[in-house]
Length: 395
Image 1 (cartoon, rainbow, N blue to C red):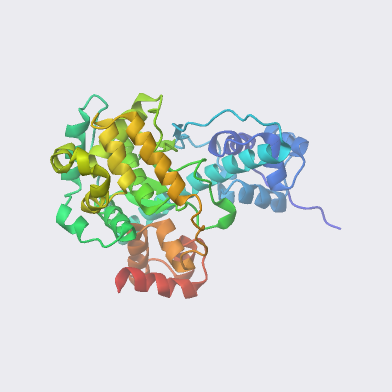
Image 2: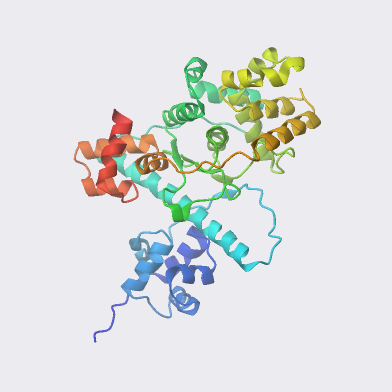
Protein backbone atom coordinates (compact mmCIF):
# COMPACT_ATOMS: atom_id res chain seq x y z
CA UNK A 1 0.00 0.00 0.00
CA UNK A 2 1.34 3.46 -0.92
CA UNK A 3 2.33 5.75 1.91
CA UNK A 4 0.15 8.77 2.62
CA UNK A 5 1.60 11.98 1.23
CA UNK A 6 2.93 14.35 3.87
CA UNK A 7 1.78 17.97 3.89
CA UNK A 8 4.80 20.28 3.61
CA UNK A 9 3.51 22.89 6.05
CA UNK A 10 5.44 25.49 8.07
CA UNK A 11 5.69 24.23 11.69
CA UNK A 12 5.83 27.77 13.14
CA UNK A 13 2.54 28.65 11.43
CA UNK A 14 0.89 25.51 12.80
CA UNK A 15 1.95 26.48 16.33
CA UNK A 16 0.90 30.10 15.79
CA UNK A 17 -2.56 29.00 14.64
CA UNK A 18 -3.09 27.05 17.86
CA UNK A 19 -1.46 29.40 20.37
CA UNK A 20 -2.16 32.87 18.96
CA UNK A 21 -5.08 32.58 16.53
CA UNK A 22 -7.18 30.09 18.50
CA UNK A 23 -5.50 30.23 21.94
CA UNK A 24 -5.81 26.50 22.59
CA UNK A 25 -3.89 24.24 24.94
CA UNK A 26 -2.19 21.48 23.03
CA UNK A 27 -4.16 18.65 24.69
CA UNK A 28 -7.51 20.24 23.82
CA UNK A 29 -6.37 21.10 20.28
CA UNK A 30 -5.25 17.52 19.73
CA UNK A 31 -8.58 16.17 21.00
CA UNK A 32 -10.54 18.48 18.67
CA UNK A 33 -8.27 17.40 15.77
CA UNK A 34 -8.55 13.69 16.63
CA UNK A 35 -4.78 13.24 16.94
CA UNK A 36 -2.46 12.47 19.85
CA UNK A 37 -0.94 15.47 21.72
CA UNK A 38 2.60 14.19 21.17
CA UNK A 39 1.87 13.87 17.46
CA UNK A 40 0.68 17.48 17.24
CA UNK A 41 3.70 18.62 19.27
CA UNK A 42 6.02 16.85 16.82
CA UNK A 43 4.38 18.63 13.86
CA UNK A 44 4.72 22.00 15.60
CA UNK A 45 8.39 21.29 16.34
CA UNK A 46 9.09 20.28 12.74
CA UNK A 47 10.09 16.76 13.77
CA UNK A 48 7.34 15.26 11.61
CA UNK A 49 4.69 16.32 9.10
CA UNK A 50 0.95 15.53 9.09
CA UNK A 51 -0.68 13.79 6.20
CA UNK A 52 -3.05 15.88 4.13
CA UNK A 53 -6.01 14.12 5.76
CA UNK A 54 -4.65 14.89 9.23
CA UNK A 55 -4.03 18.51 8.27
CA UNK A 56 -7.64 18.84 7.08
CA UNK A 57 -8.82 17.72 10.52
CA UNK A 58 -6.57 20.29 12.21
CA UNK A 59 -7.77 23.05 9.86
CA UNK A 60 -11.38 22.13 10.61
CA UNK A 61 -10.73 22.18 14.37
CA UNK A 62 -8.97 25.56 14.12
CA UNK A 63 -11.69 27.02 11.83
CA UNK A 64 -8.86 27.95 9.46
CA UNK A 65 -8.38 27.55 5.73
CA UNK A 66 -5.83 24.85 5.04
CA UNK A 67 -3.69 27.16 2.88
CA UNK A 68 -2.68 29.26 5.89
CA UNK A 69 -0.39 26.46 7.16
CA UNK A 70 1.72 26.76 4.01
CA UNK A 71 2.66 30.40 4.63
CA UNK A 72 6.43 30.89 5.06
CA UNK A 73 5.89 32.54 8.47
CA UNK A 74 3.04 33.39 10.85
CA UNK A 75 0.89 36.36 9.79
CA UNK A 76 1.61 39.58 11.65
CA UNK A 77 -1.85 41.11 11.13
CA UNK A 78 -3.93 38.88 13.43
CA UNK A 79 -4.19 40.42 16.91
CA UNK A 80 -6.19 38.76 19.70
CA UNK A 81 -9.06 40.81 21.14
CA UNK A 82 -8.63 42.44 24.54
CA UNK A 83 -10.72 40.54 27.08
CA UNK A 84 -12.78 42.99 29.15
CA UNK A 85 -15.09 40.36 30.58
CA UNK A 86 -15.74 39.86 34.27
CA UNK A 87 -15.36 36.13 34.76
CA UNK A 88 -15.23 34.62 38.25
CA UNK A 89 -12.53 32.12 38.98
CA UNK A 90 -13.87 28.56 38.60
CA UNK A 91 -14.84 27.36 42.06
CA UNK A 92 -15.35 23.80 40.97
CA UNK A 93 -13.14 20.83 40.33
CA UNK A 94 -16.05 19.00 38.70
CA UNK A 95 -14.66 17.57 35.47
CA UNK A 96 -17.89 18.10 33.54
CA UNK A 97 -18.08 21.80 34.45
CA UNK A 98 -14.41 22.36 33.68
CA UNK A 99 -14.89 20.75 30.27
CA UNK A 100 -17.86 23.06 29.67
CA UNK A 101 -15.69 26.11 30.47
CA UNK A 102 -13.01 24.86 28.09
CA UNK A 103 -15.60 24.21 25.39
CA UNK A 104 -17.07 27.71 25.78
CA UNK A 105 -13.58 29.21 25.35
CA UNK A 106 -13.16 27.17 22.15
CA UNK A 107 -16.54 28.31 20.83
CA UNK A 108 -15.77 31.95 21.61
CA UNK A 109 -12.49 31.83 19.68
CA UNK A 110 -14.25 30.10 16.78
CA UNK A 111 -16.80 32.92 16.68
CA UNK A 112 -14.06 35.56 16.69
CA UNK A 113 -12.32 33.83 13.78
CA UNK A 114 -15.64 33.65 11.88
CA UNK A 115 -16.04 37.41 12.37
CA UNK A 116 -12.50 38.08 11.09
CA UNK A 117 -13.15 35.91 8.03
CA UNK A 118 -16.54 37.52 7.35
CA UNK A 119 -14.89 40.94 7.37
CA UNK A 120 -12.14 39.72 5.00
CA UNK A 121 -14.79 38.24 2.66
CA UNK A 122 -16.74 41.50 2.62
CA UNK A 123 -13.60 43.48 1.76
CA UNK A 124 -12.99 41.02 -1.09
CA UNK A 125 -16.55 41.56 -2.38
CA UNK A 126 -15.92 45.31 -2.49
CA UNK A 127 -12.70 44.73 -4.44
CA UNK A 128 -14.52 42.51 -6.95
CA UNK A 129 -17.17 45.19 -7.40
CA UNK A 130 -14.48 47.84 -7.93
CA UNK A 131 -15.79 49.88 -5.00
CA UNK A 132 -14.23 51.29 -1.84
CA UNK A 133 -15.76 50.23 1.50
CA UNK A 134 -17.32 53.03 3.55
CA UNK A 135 -14.99 54.71 6.03
CA UNK A 136 -15.88 55.09 9.69
CA UNK A 137 -15.24 58.66 10.80
CA UNK A 138 -16.42 58.35 14.41
CA UNK A 139 -13.57 58.65 16.93
CA UNK A 140 -13.71 59.12 20.70
CA UNK A 141 -11.32 59.36 23.63
CA UNK A 142 -11.87 58.08 27.16
CA UNK A 143 -11.16 61.62 28.35
CA UNK A 144 -14.30 62.86 26.56
CA UNK A 145 -17.22 63.71 28.85
CA UNK A 146 -19.78 60.89 28.41
CA UNK A 147 -22.56 63.33 27.45
CA UNK A 148 -20.53 64.94 24.64
CA UNK A 149 -19.33 61.49 23.47
CA UNK A 150 -22.95 60.29 23.32
CA UNK A 151 -23.98 63.39 21.38
CA UNK A 152 -21.15 62.78 18.90
CA UNK A 153 -22.36 59.19 18.40
CA UNK A 154 -25.94 60.31 17.85
CA UNK A 155 -24.81 62.92 15.35
CA UNK A 156 -22.60 60.40 13.54
CA UNK A 157 -25.50 57.94 13.29
CA UNK A 158 -27.85 60.72 12.14
CA UNK A 159 -30.12 59.48 14.89
CA UNK A 160 -33.82 60.23 14.37
CA UNK A 161 -35.93 59.76 17.50
CA UNK A 162 -39.18 60.02 15.52
CA UNK A 163 -38.19 57.02 13.40
CA UNK A 164 -37.26 55.06 16.54
CA UNK A 165 -40.62 55.79 18.13
CA UNK A 166 -42.35 54.36 15.06
CA UNK A 167 -40.94 50.94 16.07
CA UNK A 168 -43.81 48.88 17.45
CA UNK A 169 -41.84 46.46 19.61
CA UNK A 170 -38.39 45.54 20.90
CA UNK A 171 -37.45 43.55 17.76
CA UNK A 172 -38.25 46.41 15.41
CA UNK A 173 -36.23 48.72 17.70
CA UNK A 174 -33.32 46.28 17.46
CA UNK A 175 -33.59 46.33 13.66
CA UNK A 176 -33.59 50.14 13.73
CA UNK A 177 -30.32 50.28 15.70
CA UNK A 178 -28.69 47.61 13.56
CA UNK A 179 -29.54 49.48 10.39
CA UNK A 180 -28.33 52.93 11.46
CA UNK A 181 -25.03 51.48 12.71
CA UNK A 182 -24.49 49.48 9.51
CA UNK A 183 -25.23 52.57 7.43
CA UNK A 184 -22.12 54.10 8.99
CA UNK A 185 -19.89 51.31 7.63
CA UNK A 186 -19.84 49.01 10.66
CA UNK A 187 -20.83 45.37 10.17
CA UNK A 188 -23.38 44.26 12.81
CA UNK A 189 -23.60 40.48 13.22
CA UNK A 190 -24.73 37.81 15.64
CA UNK A 191 -22.72 34.87 16.93
CA UNK A 192 -22.42 31.74 14.81
CA UNK A 193 -25.47 30.20 13.16
CA UNK A 194 -23.94 26.79 13.93
CA UNK A 195 -25.52 25.43 17.11
CA UNK A 196 -22.31 23.63 18.10
CA UNK A 197 -20.66 27.07 18.36
CA UNK A 198 -23.43 28.80 20.35
CA UNK A 199 -22.33 30.75 23.41
CA UNK A 200 -23.81 31.24 26.85
CA UNK A 201 -24.61 34.82 27.85
CA UNK A 202 -22.35 34.52 30.88
CA UNK A 203 -19.51 33.69 28.48
CA UNK A 204 -20.01 36.70 26.21
CA UNK A 205 -22.66 39.27 25.37
CA UNK A 206 -20.72 40.80 22.53
CA UNK A 207 -17.36 41.63 20.98
CA UNK A 208 -15.98 43.91 18.31
CA UNK A 209 -13.11 44.07 15.82
CA UNK A 210 -12.15 47.74 15.53
CA UNK A 211 -10.19 47.49 12.28
CA UNK A 212 -10.57 49.73 9.25
CA UNK A 213 -12.27 49.46 6.89
CA UNK A 214 -15.47 47.71 7.97
CA UNK A 215 -15.17 47.20 11.73
CA UNK A 216 -17.26 44.28 13.00
CA UNK A 217 -19.64 44.27 15.96
CA UNK A 218 -21.05 40.92 17.16
CA UNK A 219 -23.87 40.30 19.66
CA UNK A 220 -25.17 37.13 21.30
CA UNK A 221 -28.71 36.26 20.06
CA UNK A 222 -29.45 34.57 23.40
CA UNK A 223 -29.74 38.05 24.88
CA UNK A 224 -33.07 39.91 24.79
CA UNK A 225 -33.61 42.41 21.94
CA UNK A 226 -33.20 45.31 24.37
CA UNK A 227 -30.09 43.66 25.78
CA UNK A 228 -28.65 43.36 22.27
CA UNK A 229 -29.38 47.03 21.59
CA UNK A 230 -27.37 48.03 24.66
CA UNK A 231 -24.51 45.75 23.56
CA UNK A 232 -24.54 47.23 20.03
CA UNK A 233 -24.16 50.76 21.37
CA UNK A 234 -21.62 49.65 24.00
CA UNK A 235 -19.45 47.96 21.35
CA UNK A 236 -19.88 50.96 19.06
CA UNK A 237 -18.18 53.06 21.75
CA UNK A 238 -15.27 50.58 21.79
CA UNK A 239 -14.97 50.86 18.00
CA UNK A 240 -14.95 54.66 18.25
CA UNK A 241 -12.12 54.27 20.80
CA UNK A 242 -10.26 52.01 18.35
CA UNK A 243 -10.44 49.01 20.71
CA UNK A 244 -11.09 45.40 19.66
CA UNK A 245 -12.58 43.78 22.77
CA UNK A 246 -14.74 41.01 24.22
CA UNK A 247 -17.23 41.89 26.96
CA UNK A 248 -20.04 40.40 28.99
CA UNK A 249 -20.98 43.43 31.09
CA UNK A 250 -24.48 43.18 32.50
CA UNK A 251 -26.33 46.47 32.77
CA UNK A 252 -28.19 45.15 35.78
CA UNK A 253 -25.10 44.70 37.97
CA UNK A 254 -25.25 47.07 40.93
CA UNK A 255 -21.49 47.23 41.26
CA UNK A 256 -19.86 49.10 38.37
CA UNK A 257 -17.20 47.22 36.38
CA UNK A 258 -13.64 47.39 37.70
CA UNK A 259 -12.35 48.31 34.24
CA UNK A 260 -12.54 52.12 33.74
CA UNK A 261 -12.96 51.63 29.99
CA UNK A 262 -16.08 49.53 30.57
CA UNK A 263 -17.42 52.16 32.97
CA UNK A 264 -16.93 54.81 30.25
CA UNK A 265 -18.55 52.65 27.55
CA UNK A 266 -21.53 51.89 29.80
CA UNK A 267 -22.02 55.57 30.66
CA UNK A 268 -21.83 56.65 27.03
CA UNK A 269 -24.14 53.85 25.85
CA UNK A 270 -26.67 54.77 28.54
CA UNK A 271 -26.57 58.42 27.49
CA UNK A 272 -26.96 57.51 23.80
CA UNK A 273 -30.04 55.39 24.50
CA UNK A 274 -31.59 57.52 27.25
CA UNK A 275 -30.22 61.09 27.23
CA UNK A 276 -30.28 62.70 30.65
CA UNK A 277 -31.76 65.96 29.36
CA UNK A 278 -34.69 64.06 27.85
CA UNK A 279 -35.20 61.69 30.78
CA UNK A 280 -35.13 63.85 33.90
CA UNK A 281 -37.78 66.41 32.79
CA UNK A 282 -40.39 63.65 32.39
CA UNK A 283 -39.69 61.89 35.71
CA UNK A 284 -42.09 62.23 38.63
CA UNK A 285 -40.78 60.60 41.80
CA UNK A 286 -44.27 59.98 43.15
CA UNK A 287 -45.57 58.15 40.08
CA UNK A 288 -42.28 56.71 38.80
CA UNK A 289 -43.14 53.01 38.76
CA UNK A 290 -46.58 53.63 37.27
CA UNK A 291 -44.97 55.81 34.58
CA UNK A 292 -42.19 53.35 33.73
CA UNK A 293 -43.98 51.54 30.88
CA UNK A 294 -44.74 54.82 29.11
CA UNK A 295 -41.21 56.17 29.64
CA UNK A 296 -39.63 52.96 28.36
CA UNK A 297 -41.85 53.08 25.24
CA UNK A 298 -40.71 56.65 24.62
CA UNK A 299 -37.01 55.64 24.54
CA UNK A 300 -37.65 52.12 23.18
CA UNK A 301 -35.67 50.49 26.00
CA UNK A 302 -36.73 48.21 28.84
CA UNK A 303 -38.07 49.71 32.10
CA UNK A 304 -35.01 48.22 33.78
CA UNK A 305 -32.74 50.39 31.59
CA UNK A 306 -34.67 53.48 32.73
CA UNK A 307 -34.25 52.51 36.38
CA UNK A 308 -30.56 51.81 35.85
CA UNK A 309 -30.11 55.24 34.23
CA UNK A 310 -31.83 56.90 37.18
CA UNK A 311 -29.51 55.05 39.54
CA UNK A 312 -26.43 56.10 37.53
CA UNK A 313 -27.64 59.71 37.50
CA UNK A 314 -28.15 59.66 41.28
CA UNK A 315 -31.90 60.20 40.97
CA UNK A 316 -32.82 57.01 42.85
CA UNK A 317 -31.00 55.08 45.58
CA UNK A 318 -29.38 51.67 45.25
CA UNK A 319 -31.99 50.36 47.68
CA UNK A 320 -34.83 51.53 45.44
CA UNK A 321 -33.17 50.05 42.35
CA UNK A 322 -32.54 46.75 44.14
CA UNK A 323 -36.16 46.61 45.32
CA UNK A 324 -37.25 47.09 41.71
CA UNK A 325 -34.87 44.35 40.56
CA UNK A 326 -36.23 41.99 43.21
CA UNK A 327 -39.79 42.65 42.07
CA UNK A 328 -38.76 41.83 38.50
CA UNK A 329 -37.24 38.54 39.59
CA UNK A 330 -40.38 37.58 41.48
CA UNK A 331 -42.55 38.51 38.50
CA UNK A 332 -40.60 36.47 35.98
CA UNK A 333 -39.26 33.50 37.96
CA UNK A 334 -42.26 31.32 37.05
CA UNK A 335 -42.51 32.60 33.49
CA UNK A 336 -42.29 29.73 30.95
CA UNK A 337 -39.09 29.59 28.90
CA UNK A 338 -39.86 30.32 25.22
CA UNK A 339 -39.25 27.46 22.84
CA UNK A 340 -38.36 27.33 19.17
CA UNK A 341 -36.39 29.94 17.30
CA UNK A 342 -36.16 32.08 14.20
CA UNK A 343 -36.31 30.35 10.79
CA UNK A 344 -32.90 29.19 9.60
CA UNK A 345 -32.67 31.75 6.79
CA UNK A 346 -33.33 34.56 9.31
CA UNK A 347 -30.58 33.22 11.55
CA UNK A 348 -28.21 33.11 8.56
CA UNK A 349 -29.05 36.73 7.74
CA UNK A 350 -28.71 37.91 11.34
CA UNK A 351 -25.39 36.11 11.70
CA UNK A 352 -23.96 37.71 8.56
CA UNK A 353 -25.58 41.13 8.88
CA UNK A 354 -27.65 42.94 6.28
CA UNK A 355 -24.71 45.01 4.98
CA UNK A 356 -22.78 41.82 4.27
CA UNK A 357 -25.83 40.16 2.68
CA UNK A 358 -26.63 43.06 0.35
CA UNK A 359 -23.02 43.31 -0.81
CA UNK A 360 -22.76 39.54 -1.35
CA UNK A 361 -25.93 39.43 -3.45
CA UNK A 362 -24.80 42.47 -5.45
CA UNK A 363 -21.53 40.66 -6.26
CA UNK A 364 -23.60 37.67 -7.37
CA UNK A 365 -25.97 39.76 -9.53
CA UNK A 366 -22.99 41.38 -11.25
CA UNK A 367 -21.48 37.91 -11.87
CA UNK A 368 -18.41 38.59 -9.76
CA UNK A 369 -19.06 35.43 -7.73
CA UNK A 370 -20.85 32.14 -8.42
CA UNK A 371 -23.89 30.68 -6.69
CA UNK A 372 -21.52 28.32 -4.87
CA UNK A 373 -19.50 31.32 -3.66
CA UNK A 374 -22.69 32.99 -2.46
CA UNK A 375 -23.68 29.85 -0.58
CA UNK A 376 -20.21 29.67 1.01
CA UNK A 377 -20.59 33.28 2.18
CA UNK A 378 -23.62 32.20 4.24
CA UNK A 379 -22.01 29.33 6.17
CA UNK A 380 -22.13 27.00 3.13
CA UNK A 381 -25.92 26.94 3.33
CA UNK A 382 -28.21 25.03 1.00
CA UNK A 383 -29.00 27.35 -1.97
CA UNK A 384 -32.71 27.08 -1.14
CA UNK A 385 -32.10 29.38 1.84
CA UNK A 386 -30.54 32.04 -0.39
CA UNK A 387 -33.89 32.81 -2.06
CA UNK A 388 -35.46 33.40 1.37
CA UNK A 389 -32.55 35.65 2.45
CA UNK A 390 -32.88 37.56 -0.83
CA UNK A 391 -36.59 38.12 -0.19
CA UNK A 392 -35.85 39.41 3.31
CA UNK A 393 -33.40 42.07 2.23
CA UNK A 394 -34.79 43.14 -1.16
CA UNK A 395 -38.56 42.64 -0.82
